[in-house]
Image (cartoon, rainbow, N blue to C red):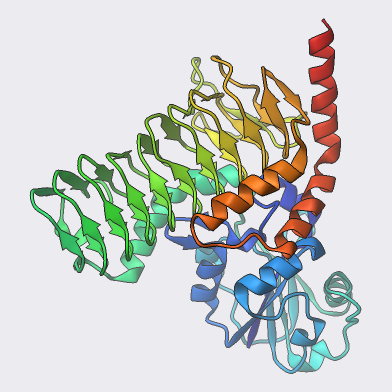
Length: 426
């Protein structure tokens, strides 16, 4: 049985901006793993094929080394096609059985189970046509499987997912190196220090209220406090960090200051003092010293977020911090508003007061307004330099993907730049 992951619905993808601009939805993280990891662990397929927006196909193909946007991957096996926003723990559809298409109340395809014989009679010009054909020719059933609706849903569920995945992993104990004195609070059964981890003296690991998993090659420097539930990814470094509950960090991150209930993708730095709370941070982000965000409004009302720069969306939560896209760079002393959105490749200069709640992708925020700055070429040069420092390569395929994102995000950015120009003329 082959698992087919499909990420092509613009109306769904935009609810996970800016993090979904440079990756398929199933590469988003929650807890100790990605959404794809959770679905694979639940379904246990023999094989996997992926369908992503065309602009990111070449980059993702190099990343996974498996068929991407290859219609031939649909032939020769029974298929279970799954919408990547499905919550894996609630996916209880048997892999074997008669062909059917599961639809939610809005008519969105949640899954499709298709026998290899039925695959042959479905149109296969492209993945959208294939799904439409399956929906038209196969029995439709009602599906009430819960799904992720917005990017902040992953942040708000992060702690409970860490706890569940820690229990499922079944790993406890100290396989790495602890240099005493180190304090472990709570049950040692709720702590796992993987091989190759180095924990320096004067570190506190507090598992009283949740488990702590420190993955291979991580290094925890003196005066760091880690509260569970927490996952520290491979080869990450914590430098005197106050790592509060509910964090998923890494791999290969450098973290200092105070971090609470946040998800930070790989190769990002928050190396200095400053607070980051209830936030989702992409890859290759650098948060300058004393960069701080608000995650709670003064009146304790629900936080709203503007994913498109115009329409506020009520998150239904009083605690939502910042959504920070890939390759964002902030200067020292940057103050981020509650529920703020920093688009991919944005460059931020501090103003001494909280920033606007929406900074578009590729925007240069300078002197309190969004500008073109020195253009995307300079941003690419910065990305190339940052990646080379971690022995990673900025490839032509990556540049082509981000060029596509630049065009996709142009309308919102141009509107913000025009607003900035009007501000200067006042």
